[in-house]
Image (cartoon, rainbow, N blue to C red; front, side, top):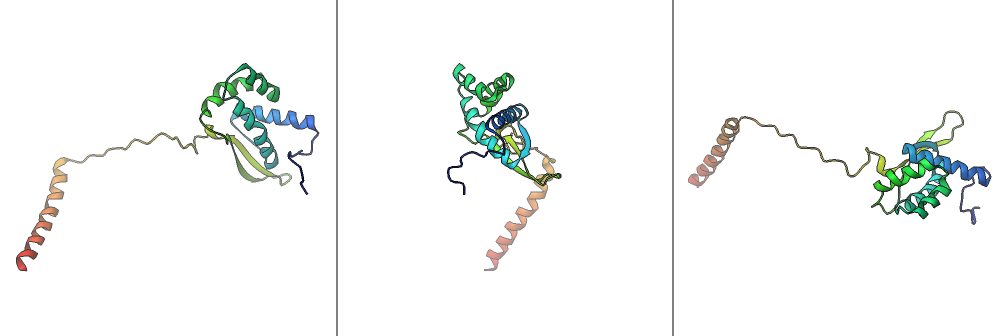
Length: 163
């Protein structure tokens, strides 16, 4: 039973687990997506989303809090410089987990975890495609449309005269 089990220990001691999640979070911030196991991806999601929420307000205090979790100055700088600008209006859900199948060696379930706003494929704010206009000669349009209209008018006039 899982009574009171709030965190997945991932088969590691506390210090190892914290440093592993910090390293994975730094890699996620740097590369915008990483491949890992499903269990680690779920644990990483719980670890990194509050940090991204903190980065939305750029204060010295929030930078120090994020640094205490990540322990990497470059990752904190990129988090506040690039990531927080893109996720500024999003109320939460900064990461997406996509299951990839099984790993070849040990059959572990693999997943890709990515920052949502940095994926161009699933981006909802994709630039609208310009409509390409194709034009034919104006005389061709009129000559093609005119006989059809005349035929329709003639048939309606013939029906009225017959009645």
